[in-house]
Length: 308
Image (cartoon, rainbow, N blue to C red; front, side):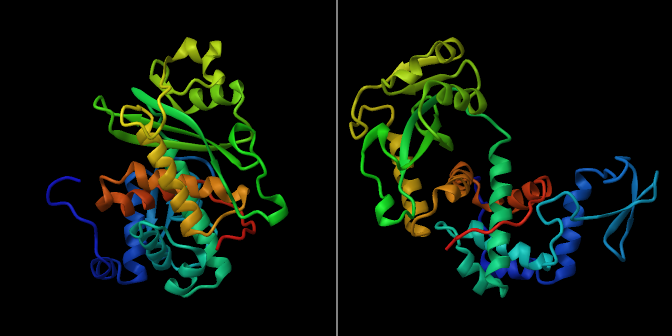
């Protein structure tokens, strides 16, 4: 965090975004900075109709709402409550459940769940805009969700039926953690490892991992410099120690805060964990970045989940 920068307090936030109109004007300005594009014909010139908070296209006269094409699209919820939800979500180190959000912003559980879902989608969208590069540590992890007793894992190691997650963390030259990526996968076969690397790590990067044979595939070794660390993760000399510390923190965040999840929902919370971790040094900017990301996140349809 730069010198003098600090997070907004609850009082400061409530004063800055005190009314619905203030939030509407703020979102308008944020979107206006990105430029106008007609949702019907794609024309790049439009006029603001301030009394209705919409643009009118100069070409086809079509009216476009400030919310169209964003994570807020098709929502009847006051924008002020969206802003409060985003602030509460990023302000708590442990995150916020739909049940708690329901109470805090005064909405139904269904609405609170949907708001949380859309904001986490904005986090995922932001995470996907960049790749890891330089020195990247990489390994596999296992997360236990909220299974029934008869479905609880009976095995350990790479053959377990727990949720399988590939984790990668980039490091500084002096081996301090920079950024993290986590992805729930079906298996740890070579093709899966290869796809993760090509989707999330810049070619030419140095990947440090254990001796798992999937990392020795020709497609991996052709595009990346591979270094194998065979030391136990708890060893002070291990280059994977930060990676495993971050995995442990992610498990505590996901399984502790939300009391376990269904496997289908796990990726959402890993996305939130990575979003927070990757912006840990700029907490004063996290709210603004989340709202800005929501502006470019495609709208979602509603589906049911058991978020606690």
